[in-house]
Image (tube, rainbow, N blue to C red):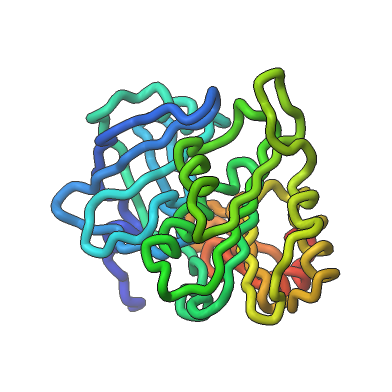
Length: 280
């Protein structure tokens, strides 16, 4: 008789959590401070995700936006109102209960990144998962070389984490450049797609690792620009977070040619991702 394994809390079975604080970031995104019950800690890595359940709306995978905080029951999720569950979640108030499974996925290889210059390239909502890695690197500044952050949004109203963007702009120890596709009357910054920020940017490709996250259309053009500048394919990391699903590879929705994004990703080197049809 085959062995029957018991469900594993936080992997198979959601654990209860509450929304400790909710902050509006833009017209479509909110930042949720989540606290797990029972003294449990998430212990996630940058680039990992959780599966959120909202009662009556099912489940959805969402990347963790906050840096690792070992032993802490608290973490942050930046959520766009873009579907049934996320719309319901946006309507919840502070103190509301939700369910959490995870963390899932491989995350960024932190140990391999240390000692290198890091080039962060975030497009739109891609800043949400990449923020976990950015804050991790800033909190452990001495472990990394030069830090460069490039951010692009469709318009000024869709700029996420604006207070932090201002901090990055003032921080003399990092390079920060941002742009918007379309400006407004008040916008005095750069206008253009995110690859325009790479033009003229001085980098050391052989000692720099690129971490990229954004809309699918962005990857092709960003990667082409990085390769033309001498970046090696194995030193370009990208998150395919939009293909995440159940977190365990059981539903098969994340599968690309036998590779499960939920389990083998969502972070891939370009060297590996380019071999996956329809991945990019």
